[in-house]
Structures are given as structure tokens and as C-alpha cells.
Image (cartoon, rainbow, N blue to C red; front, top):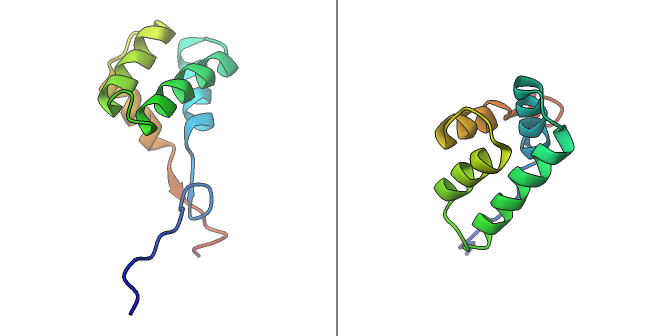
Length: 90
């Protein structure tokens, strides 16, 4: 009897994510893309390790990047980068 199936969809079934978020944020706010990625990814590693909440990660990233949006808006930008990988799922 199968009790649990686990698979990692990120980067396989789903495209987008932190590099794409950093690119969008960098372009919109005219900041360095690598710096944006380092900040965003850094706070989300802390959230993944349960050192901070996801909500706090969004808010801290906005503050560290010194951009004029809310954490909720950054989250929306991030999720807007996701899409289905058409090569895997036609």
C-alpha cells in the first residue's frame, strides 16, 4: 500500500521562481539583479529553515531592497513568475 508520494515540482513541472522574481524586481526598481536575488533568496532560506515566517521573509526582503512596495506585493510578483513547463506537461 502506497502511503506517501513526494515529488519536487519546482524547476521540473513548474517554471519561474527566485531568479525570475529578482529579474522582475531589478528591472522595475532599477536595482542590481544579483543583489536582489541574494536578498530575496537569503530571506527565503531563513523561512525554509523556520527561522522566520514567510510573511516576515517578504517584508524583510522589501525593506532590505529599499523598494516602494509591500511584502504582499513582492509575493504577488514572485507568484506571477510561475507557469507550467510546457515541455513536461503539454
